[in-house]
Length: 223
Ligand SMILES: [Zn+2]
Image (cartoon, rainbow, N blue to C red; front, side, top):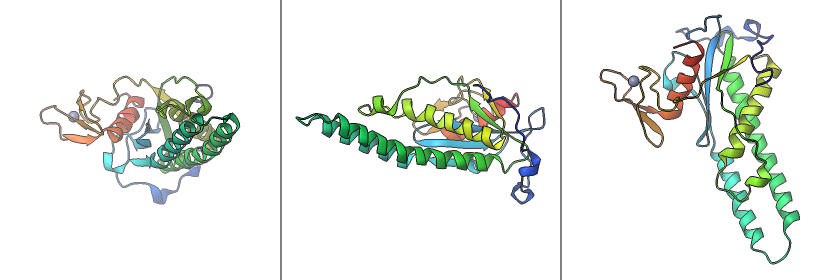
């Protein structure tokens, strides 16, 4: 990711001490607080600092975006059944929906950036995933929102982080969804949860995306 790894200009000076938590989060070797971000469609983003509890994670709902997208797909199908040329109508529809989805993305990105900036010297940690670039126009009849949404969110997040001087690191995404954030063993993946089957691990069942955000954060500090 170009420019994504540059350390930011604003660090401790931008932090409000009132927002610091009583138990300090675990730091990166260079003094950063690693804040992992897991992206998806159900939850647009889940952000969590290494070493914290899943309940402390920030969760950005993807509900609004999913509804807008479903409306787009439904309306496009209706227009395609028309007996006249609806290309113009379809492009206007895509433009309108794109604009409102973009507003949702910007809002979610802002929440993640502000959440991360509460912590001392934050480092935003993303999975090193290379997405294909797909235009919303090409996705308008598809049921696969993620192909457009996830890269769009990721890109907007990196751009915003760079704007505010929040450094970004990329980590290996392999198995982050399967891995228990406490014992690091692969658990049983369910629809929205992860069941840790390691004897004596205190986790048992945890929200899959919250666990993934913690795992992503911990990968940046080598845990
Ligand atoms: Zn475990």
